[in-house]
Length: 400
Image 1 (cartoon, rainbow, N blue to C red):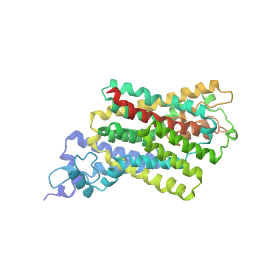
Image 2: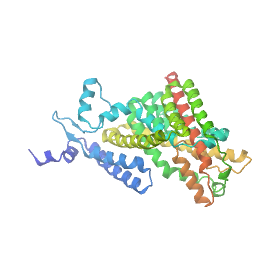
Image 3: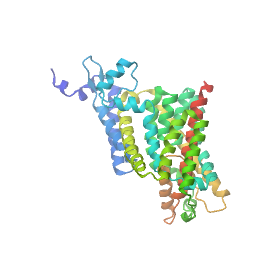
């Protein structure tokens, strides 16, 4: 017995290919970077802190098993048969979470349910045209990344899955990749959640493309119409039924989001506290921690990951630019003062992008309050992205 047998995390660095060893070290460092920026609030702490810690742990904790295989005690996402899966369920501590919550999309639905329970839809109902107008423009990334990805060699289903990153809706990407590209589920979902957090830093740069004078346009938040709870409750139920009828393949997402919204508007306090608290934050934590543990060096070394990184960034950038273009157009046609930054909020990372545009507007004009107006397109973006997801899952088979 040698001393290295006691410190297998270090020993395995010399047992694997040098490129894989350097990738492990890189991911450990990257994990620490995510933890730091999450702690500082530069990136989303709800995602970055647990994801970063899991990345550090899974890439540091490689070990040699009795059969001579090298692996970890975290999770095996692509087990091939029932016997193998049952073995992993007894060994890997995150395997039950992955098997019973990730592989069937449950965790995406739970996150969506929690988001619904904290979402405000007053402006969406009061001004549906402007909200949906901007949301359509903010789908540029989900639409135009598809042909680019196919031209780059991905299959139609893989291209559709990575294109959904442009909707800036993590649960939607998770669900869509499971339905269309299960072989790339792990890298696509990790790319999506990494980039969604980067929206905090990246979208303010896009916002600067709009002249400061326009970024600082004031809107009277007192003009936001108040909508009755009964109207919002009725909207939630009716729209849920219509969307499930039109796109049944995405019905679990629709049902999850709108039941959270309906519970909120019905004022069922116990359910609101449960869904917006333990359900939302518990599922977000396990989502981030499990995704981080899936990001091992073997995943990042796959050549297709580079394509996914580029296409994910392209999709989010196109959606952001499309949202800003829609905001500028609506600013021109609106009869009332309209801040074009609201178009950027239509990229549906609820409520993050709405908060980002409020911060950008405030930096341009300390009197500017556009958050209530931004929430309408923000929620509309969730609906349009879910519709695109349903269309892709149902119709992408016709593209081959």
